[in-house]
Image (cartoon, rainbow, N blue to C red; front, top):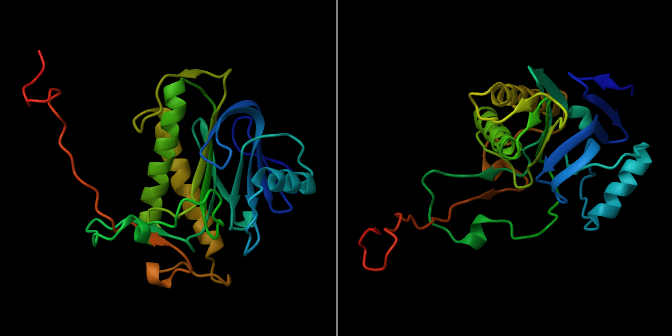
Length: 259
C-alpha cells in the first residue's frame, strides 16, 4: 500500500498486518511491552493472529517488521484487531491513529461488590494475548517539555476512556497501550493539558480515531460483535475489589501539625 501523509510530516503505511507511522527524528514515549522514551523515525502497530501466545516479543516484532519490509526501528504495539480497521484523525498540530476492539473489556464498576484482587484481575502476565486491545498512537508537531510529553499520555488515555465509555460502556480493555510522540525540533510547548492547543487537539483526534476504528471493526458485514456486557465478552475482567480510602496524615506521630 502506498504511503499516505497524515498531517505535518507524518506518514502512514500499512502492509502485511503492520501499520507504520513515520516521521524522522521523533521522540516517542510508549506504554507498550518495551516502552519508555525512544528516539526513532517510526512507531508500529502490529496485528497478531487469533490464539497468539508468543512470549519472545522482541524476536516476534523483528520477524513481523522484516516480513512487512520495514527496516527502521521504533516502538511497537501489538493488537488482536486487524490493522485494516485502523483509523486516523488530524486536528491542529496533532495526528492520532487507533485500532479498537473490545473482546477483552476491563470494567470498572462505581459500586464494586468487594471481591478479591485475584477475582478482579487477569494476573500479572507480561504478555497476555491482545485478543481485542485499543491501541493509540499520537504525534504532536511541537517540541514538548518533558512533563508535557508525559502528560500527553494521560490526555490520550482520558480521551480513549471517555470515548469507549460512550460507545461501548467500558473504559478500556485488559491490554490497551498508547504511544505519544513529538518533534524535538519543533515549536516549543511547555504544557499539553486539555485547555492547550496540543491537549485539545489530542482529545479530538483520539476520540474520532477510536470511534472510527470501532465502527470499522464492528461494521455490519463483520463476523465480530461488540459485547453489550462483560458476560457477553469472550474475555475480560471487572475490578470489583474495594480499596481502602485514606485521609492525608498531619505529618507527625501524635497527630499535631508540624511547625
